[in-house]
Image (cartoon, rainbow over all chains, first blue to last red; front, side, top):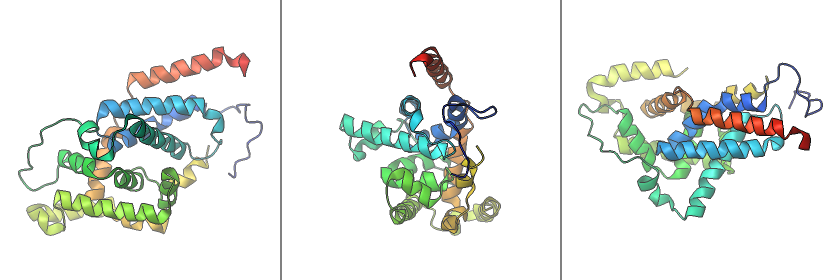
Length: 194
Length: 62
């Protein structure tokens, strides 16, 4: 918004091409897709559809604005519109959108990645996307609200409900649940809170 | 593209409860970054290459 853009179809030297910008955002876009829908084949299809949509809409992208947010919005819209078209309801998400896998119970009470993926897949879509956008993709509540086309307060409440639900599903209500891991867990958390 | 960063780096106080990391957030970020670190599948690189070529070859139409 502060960047003065001259003639928009002229590409100043040193400015990244649209393709380069897309490439740069690909890892993030994929991570969003993969965490949003756990079926990895479907997630990649979604990324592909998003890239094609983005390409066809590239003239509507405002140079200098947030490319990541723009792409995430497209991917999200694709996801919901495909769900609507196929008549899949949110409740089906677990069956269709997640990989089939047998999950052995954790043996030592630690929360492993598989447990986490399963728990995340159990969240309602709106809560899952909210916690991913704010908790992992690095968007502010404002940005997440814009991506989801909803109010900031709604995003906040979805994030907090998602956290509560995940804690319930994973049985991590407090440090005491970790038993011997408690001290290392809290050390990790401290180092993580930067 | 410098001002692309300001949105992503903004540390609004709104986000405080998320950056106060707990087991959930940590796990979520771990999962997310494990996908992010995967190498980009060929199909996407090919696709972008093709889209770019098509655009260049039909450049005169625009």
